[in-house]
Length: 408
Image (cartoon, rainbow, N blue to C red):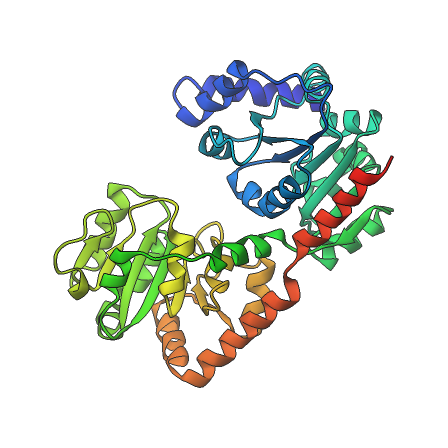
C-alpha cells in the first residue's frame, strides 16, 4: 500500500508538471540530476523537506562542516523551494541534490552512490524505505528538531512499521518534552530533548553587522518603527484601519509574504491616506514617507534590527510565519489568532511578550499597552529570558555527532 501510494503521488506530480512550474521542477530536477559516486569518501548527508527545514538544520550542518573538514557534505531536498534556491551554492555543501522517490530501487542506488557514514534528517520527513534501508545497512541516522503532537499521522495504525523503524534509528532529538513523552510511551529508547535549532540560527543572523542606507534614511524621523513581516491580505486590512494613528506615531515597513503587483496594490489601496515608497525605487523624499514596502527577497530577517515592534502575518490564515526572527532582536511581536502550533508563540503569549489579536480593536489595545515603557520592557525581558534558556540546541547535537565520528 505504501509503495502504491508513493507511485500514485509521483504520477500526480508528473501530471501537474505539464502546467505547474513547481511540479515541473520537482520532476525534471530528479530526472536530470547526477548522483555522485562517493564510495571511498567519508560522507555526512543531511536531508530537509524544504528551505524552511534547512534553515532549521543549518546551524548543525554549518558547524559540522567547520569541525569535520575531512568529510564530504551532501545536502538533499524533497521540494524545489530548497533545491532551486541553493543548488549553485558551493559554500553550503559539496553536493546539493533532490531526494529520489522513496522506492526500494531508488533508495538502494542513492545510498550505494553517496555511501553516507552519518545521515541527518530534519524535523519530520519520515520516508519509510529510506529509514528501513539505512537501518538495515547499519548507517547512523539522527533526526533533529522533531516536533510531534498526539494526533500526528505517525501514530496512526497505518504507520506501525514506520514507527518500528524509527525506534531503531541512532538518535532522535526532539524540540520539546511533549514529543519526548509521546515517543517514550511508544517504547522509544533513542530520544532526548535538544530544543529548537532555529533559535541558534536566528540568534546567529541577528548578531551579524548589517547596515542599510535606504531604511536608515526612511526611519530618520523621530518616530517608532513597526515592521510588518510576511503579511497577507487580512493582516493588511486589520493594520490599515489604524493608519491615522500609526502615521502619527510609527514609520511602517511592510514586507508582504509574496512580492507581486496584487499584494503591493492592496497595500496602496488600503493605506490610501499614507505616503508610500518602495525599497527598490526609493523616492527623493524617502524620509517623509509613512510606509516603506520591501519588494526584495532575503533581507527581512535583518531589517527587524531597525524596529521597535513587529507584526507577523499569517495568523488569520493557515498559521503565523517566523516570529523567532523579530524576537531575536528582543522585539515584542503581534500576530493573528492562529498560532497554537508554534511553541515559542504559545509560551511568549502567556508571558505577555507576544500578543495575539482578532481584530483592529485588539491591535489598538496592544499598541496602547506597549506604548507604556514598563510593559514594553517587561515584554523584552521575557523574550531575552526565553532565548537564554532555549539556545544552544545545535551545540548539543553537534557534540553528539562529533562523538559518533570518533567511534570505531
